[in-house]
Length: 243
Image (tube, rainbow, N blue to C red; front, side):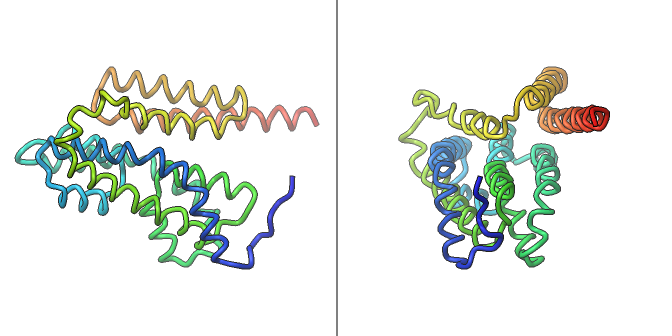
């Protein structure tokens, strides 16, 4: 396998590569944004409110959870806690990605980069880091169009929400899980990956059935991390014994 140079000569080339990398995710996220906007409009939010929420929060999962419990007046404490629970996985993703952006990224670039961090961005950045050093230009080329796509799609969905009506009749509600299935499979490395996914799924499902709310998100994440740690330790131990 040929590995590209550590630091490509042209930031413009890196930016273009980032834009090309994110195109499939933009296509997949477009209907999700439209769905969110349409559902938000049905909850009484104006297109301007949807645009500001999407631009300021930029977290599809948390935004969908917020819509589920949205009422008038808005339960701000419940909304805040639910969003926090849903986005706790970002702590793990940031910790995983932090060493890869330690070089070449200025502090403000890292802070801004983690603000726009999503599951899709994290997965693609991890894949890139496996063969190349991450650069601010590539990262910006990836996240800027993805960010704008989400804000524009959500706003458009809010504007056309009355026309779209029930979005599930188009089958667009499957776009969200389909996107995450594709991301998960891109990390497949055999039975060990399957064990981690199974533990995470069982923990999340059991927690959701027992507690409801958004606790299943952190339960699934913690179970996956724990099993990944245990299986990695067992693999290292067996390898040491084999030597």
